[in-house]
Amino acid sequence: MAEKDKEKTTENSVPPKFTLERLRQDCLQIFGVTTSTFDGAASGLDGKFTIDEIKTRIKEWQEKPIKLKGGKK
Image (tube, rainbow, N blue to C red; front, top):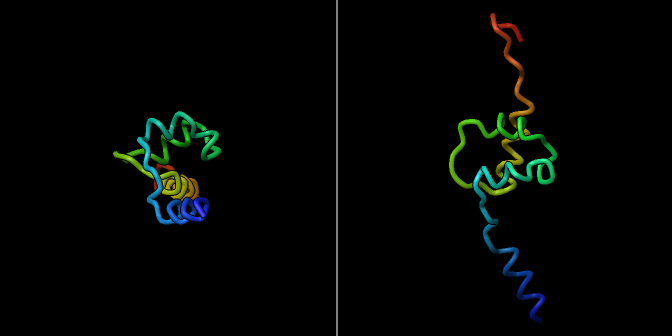
């Protein structure tokens, strides 16, 4: 019975948030990206984030088209 209560608590609990510095420390293990990729994706962010929020941010950043000087893609 206690295990079922734990599962309910876990399902309903809010995911933990971490500072960008803390997520960056283990970005290769957590997100499978280098610190330079993490830095690019997290550029302009401030505050604390869940792992899922940063995963989404990294994916979106990686899928952005590259803009070259002169307006060419």
